[in-house]
Amino acid sequence: MSTSQSNTTQWRKRQAALGFVRVEVQVRKEDASLVREIANALGDPARHDATRAILRQKITHSPSKSFKALLASAPLEGIELDRPSDFGREIDL
Image (tube, rainbow, N blue to C red):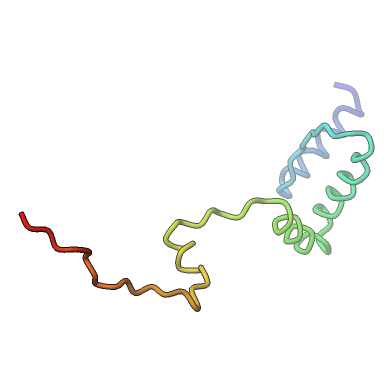
């Protein structure tokens, strides 16, 4: 193994020990600098938490609510929920 390969291997091992992984993505040319900036912000301890919070808020999907939770959160002010007890006409059998 050449010296440069050895140095790269050692650097990757140190990064892995710190919890970093190597990721390869393919994006459009005009987005490449943006993706690099995002990666740098996530790798920077001073900006990591804020960057992660913003990305999670704007990009990731929130978990779906159950139908019951959706109904519970619905605004029901002004809606009449009581039904009349009229069962219709009487039928002789």
